[in-house]
Length: 156
Image: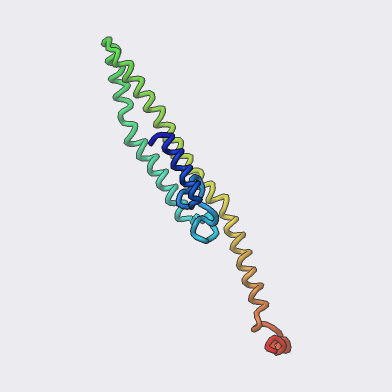
């Protein structure tokens, strides 16, 4: 699709004043009439953490196996006068550098999830205690708990 064609499609959609095409927005209320809330439970966080940790372990075991032989082969080829040896060593070094960056990112994800769970565990308890105290307060104002003389007044 050419840029001019894309611009024309956007202009046509704007002219129709249609909600069929929305760019970079979901609209008010997320489009489903409900208030949009972010909800994450401990199971979700544990799943993300486990996947990141598992990926890190697999990468270390399986993705790094080619580096030592490639460096060795590159050294041998260079010693024999082949320019390919230097290129092979360069590729092995770049692979190792990129792999370490990816391993760090996986570790960062796992650590961040652990930190997030720790940081917000007190928040969950605080909210739980506030909600339960509101429920107890509401129950205290229930008609069933009113003094006997007050029950009759409420019925009239």
